[in-house]
Image (cartoon, rainbow, N blue to C red):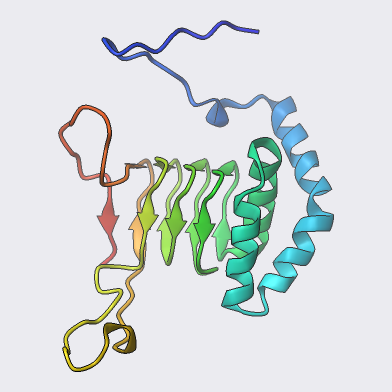
Length: 187
């Protein structure tokens, strides 16, 4: 086993995302493992078509399957249930999709504990842990003070994450870096 270099606080340590450079043998093993999950995944995928509530129940159920098995189960489930789910997609532990109307491109890494509403991800997208992709800034109406906010409805907007982007949560626990236009909202 290769010895990893220790990560220190005084300098950056280069890393590689091995997800994007898998050997042919590993890709084949993952594919076979994926097929072996079908007796569990396919009934859940079919059940999830009954309603959005059943879909959400299934996504919450598979969100907490541990790492290796969970990565494969989540990929296979979302491949059968989302509007589109590309190749070589890794969906982290604790991540929940609230709606099926989501597109995910190829070579995407969605970190742990993400929440995803109506969203489209391009290819080669990375999301950090704890990202929230809610359906736009007007999710809840609160114009009237005589009507409870919960009874006023809201307006949804699709979130579009273009290809070759990294998305981080709004609160970072490391040194502040200048921001770049990584995240683009659909008009």
